[in-house]
Image (cartoon, rainbow, N blue to C red; front, side):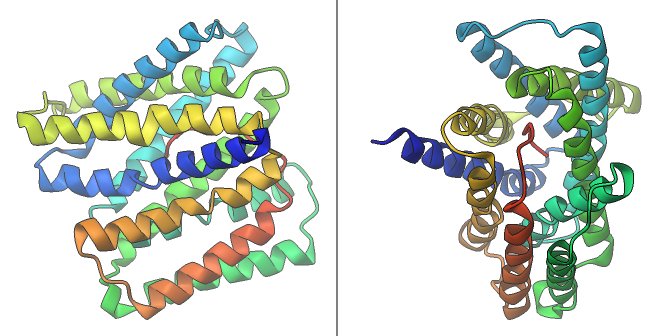
Length: 294
């Protein structure tokens, strides 16, 4: 099998893995596992697995102080919008959350245009209108059971992720993507651990169902897709990988219908298609960035 084909399959598999995050969030709620406990164990186990993998590949290393502080700061930001995403999941279906969150590439360009003086072309403006219009259509679909508070939280999470990507671009000039992601996740893990202990919301998962959810989100939704995505980027162009990653919200929607019995409504289909079309237009100009789970 050709190297580029293997890379494409890796990126698609990674995107499918990230697409399971919202599903595991719903499973956690059904199992009685609160968000703080879920995310603390998710990042603790996921971070440990990532560093074991880095050690096995001979890539584990401590970043120089400037890059280290930048990575830890990005990790704190990641903790904030990860919490927002899973909080929003309490209000909206997994499929709606997956599509709404996937508007983040559009916000990356808005931030880049305002903070980094990158040009905001007519093509990008059209993509922005398509993506925002798609979300508006989904929100307007009453049959989808959409809650405005939940959508707002998911969109805030997407904006936070866009900020992470924009900030990571400078760090990636002198830092490998996998090491940056692993270092950032240390700060993310510590953030949830401290918050969980201080708030009294951190508990030990009880029973097989809760542990299965924790193991699934840590391995299938976190560590494995990060390794696959980074390895895939070594074999395919970043712009190609960005387009392939549109598999992510599609997987979320399909799993929501199959596993959770969510409704596949016309507003969700049409709105989701608009979001994916707008993101695809944007992603053809993406040069590459580090990837960690939302």
